[in-house]
Image 1: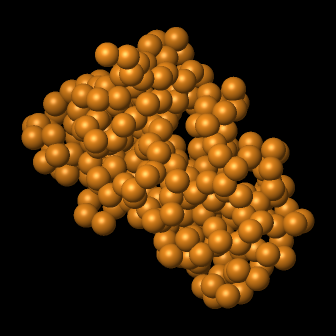
Image 2: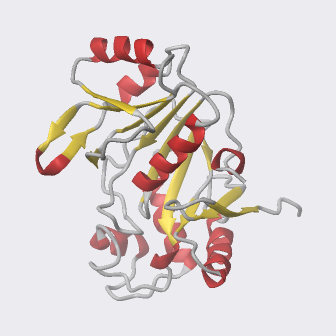
Length: 257
């Protein structure tokens, strides 16, 4: 099963990845997969990403001139199935992403079929608690994908294991060192989804599924994610973003009374 099949993609999508647990890796893996099946794929971020290595999988533009960027997209999409966009280069080998409003305008270009947006930063942590103003989600997002690494489950709530762990303590009303269970992780992801645009689908991705034990733990976490109030989550994708096959299993919510 492909990522596109697992997430039930439509012909045109704006997909925002948020949370922790491997968003950048997922964005590039998914971008390669999509580019093998369709044209008009764009990868970008509304935060910051590490400058990627050159790759035959995409061509990139770094520009703070939005008019130039629009013209470049129109010129290059017929020749290249996948484009990578950023606004500027930063110190320490990072790129600054695009304003959310730019992404909304780029999707109006007819040749664009899918924009994958890393809409959150987590500094490599598998679990992240959002601060005010995060994540930065374009208003035209059609699919929200909260990401969490299964290795966060069973870890202590502390600086080593949770990005912005003090915020997580406030959200959960739990002390430092409390062991993260499925319900606690679901509550942190619920906080990440509080600014969800209207009519946006939500399908979480539980990452770092590397063994049968991980798969069983992922199923339990998925069932907890179904219980996030107000989100109507109906499916959860379990997988491993680093290597194909990226999808290990899709679990669906039982809507029968």
